[in-house]
Image (cartoon, rainbow, N blue to C red; front, side, top):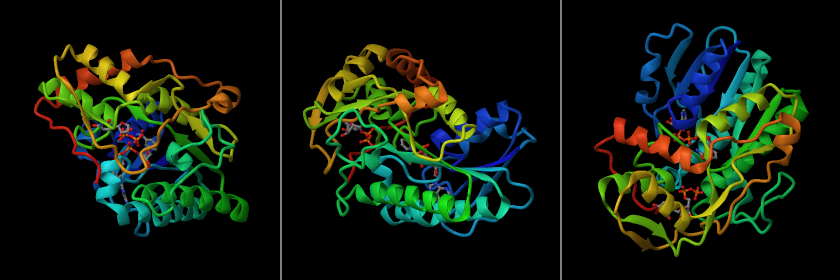
Length: 319
Ligand code: NAD
Ligand code: UDP
């Protein structure tokens, strides 16, 4: 197949591109480089089955030749990034998704949308299953991301119902691993970079809020299975192992051997209190479950930052 990956120079898009190439397909990677970097694709310079186009998908997407699938991952994704680029984030979710769907429709291609656990907002149901409609503040600072992704899901379902486009929606829960941008402000990269620099780990609030962290290779496996399954409703993918942010700071200190202190900072507005995926749909319909325990995934991520980003700095707090 010839597959288009939007957001290919990002953390997830670049790993997904590697997997699609490993499956024997051709990949056209599109990225505006707003939060991504060519560094994530540098190893593909000699790969004849890979083409890179620097384009903003919120503008009409121009691609020549056959397209069999579109995997739409382009969007700022970390709270620091989407609060820095609020309009671009809304546009990527709305115009970008419409353009990606338009491309899929025009070429008779399948489309997979990268949605997010943020559609559940600050959830009142725990763990979150796909049937939960969420608790999102529609005008808060995070709404530029949450509502853009909710719109993206809505227009994806509408293109499926109205035009018969063969669509998939994955709701991705917090995923981490090599190629995260060290300064994108997400908790795993921040803690690792801070620990390696011997700086205090910045815990927002009292650190009692929870997240569930999935290693990138597990996520990519789930995405590939979903792409190949006949499921049009959203499917959660994530690791149901749930940790408080305090517990995560201890694990990062252990994985790095760092003697850094842990310091509390203000909790960002509307920061979800808890988050944990119910993955029973993915288990039953994709026969998928994550395999990499958090300790192992952190070790691999620490190795990446140590070897590839020795002078990296962490991201600031959102806002
Ligand atoms: P990332 O910032 O590393 O990658 C996003 C990529 O999209 C970047 O390379 C960026 O330059 C590109 N991009 C953004 N807007 C664009 C536009 N208008 N046109 C072209 N390119 C554009 O983030 P990521 O973690 O790899 O996230 C990828 C996707 O997965 C996003 O859609 C995000 O919402 C979704 N997601 C990620 C997570 C996670 O934990 N990593 C969780 C839920 C959802
Ligand atoms: N967080 C933190 N310190 C940091 C970065 C993030 O305590 O340096 C917290 C953040 O407030 C949230 C959790 O870690 O409760 C996960 O944040 P992240 O930005 O990784 O992703 P989110 O799940 O909020 O999108």
